[in-house]
Each structure stands twice: as structure tokens, then as C-alpha cells.
Image 1: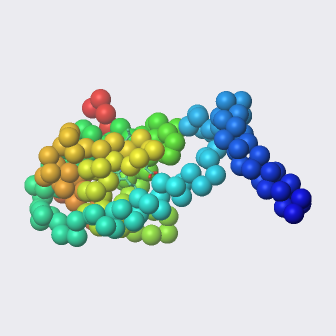
Image 2: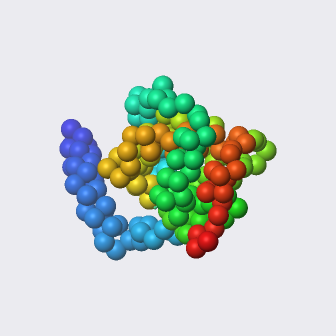
Length: 180
Ligand code: HEC
């Protein structure tokens, strides 16, 4: 009986000490706060697993706009104005994308050993969801109050076709360096 109580007492002391230890870690320890710090344990999983599940539930399966040269051109203008600073232009990657945490993927870069360019392998509905809602704990903003429904679809459709041959005007818009 005595042993049981001793065990329980230590267990309770340990339980009560947990928040104190956590507090001291945040106060005196060296938790990652700079973008160049190493991630927290499971930091990536904490965001990615629920994000994938949420997108699966909510991303629209049907795309409301057809892939026309006009839609692609409108998407390219949105991309240049709103996205290129982080996600890069064709042939001109964003300079600070790598120093963000997590970094912003360059959406005009062809993947190694595959024909995929940027997120061309993701359905437009998935990219639309990310553009509309943003991605928590990353620098990816939500655009639902900045862009119209059509604009969010136009840029999502453009990115879904980034691996295809695009009209010359579209290529020009997403490749001309800033300041030109
Ligand atoms: C301020 C920087 C910033 C801007 C501006 C920005 N993004 Fe992002 N975006 C990010 C970051 C950082 C991530 C990476 C998130 C992650 O790791 O999950 C991201 C992720 C994404 C992804 C998912 C990429 C993948 O590999 O799954 C897509 C698609 C995307 N952004 C599209 C856009 C579009 C389209 C725009 C413009 C309408 C835009 N972003 C504007 C920073 C930005």
C-alpha cells in the first residue's frame, strides 16, 4: 500500500511539474523563433496532415471556368501582381523565398525527374482552396478578401497548366523580370 502511495505522489508531482518545465523551456530554452532555426519536433506534420484532410473535404471538384487563352492571361496578371514576389517568375526565382520558414516553393520550376512544373500535378480545385484560405503557420496568405472568385480560379487554372505550352503573352507576363 505504502509503495502505491509513493508511486502516486511522484506521478502527481511529475504531472504538476510538466507545465513548469514547458514554461521554463519557452522562457530560458532556445525554442526556434528565427526562420533559419531548426523546426520544432513534428512541426511539419502538425500543419500538413490536417491541411491535407481539410483540402480533401473542401476543395471543389468541379472547375467553374474553361481553360481559354483569356482565362490563362487573366491568371498570369494575378500571378505577377500577387504571387510572383514569393513564388518566383519563370527563370527568375524569388530571392527571399528560401529565407522564409517554411520556404515558398517556386511555382515555375520543373521538378527533377518528372514533367511536373510547380504544382501542375495538383488539381485546380486544390490550388484554389490554398489561394482562397491561405496556409496557417506559413507565409502563404489568404486571398478571399483580396481577389474575386474568378481571379482565384484563373490563377489556380494557370498553375494547373504550368507544364503545358502556354500562349506567348502568358509566358511573357510570368517571365518578364520586375522593374522591366
Ligand atoms: C508572402 C509570400 C507568399 C505569397 C505572396 C503567396 N504565397 Fe503561396 N505560399 C507561400 C509559402 C511560404 C508557401 C508554402 C506553404 C507550405 O509549406 O505549406 C506557399 C504555398 C503555396 C502553394 C502550395 C504549394 C505546394 O507545393 O503545395 C500554392 C499552390 C500557392 N502557395 C499559391 C500561391 C498563389 C497562387 C499566390 C498568389 C495569388 C500565392 N501563393 C502568394 C508564400 C506566398
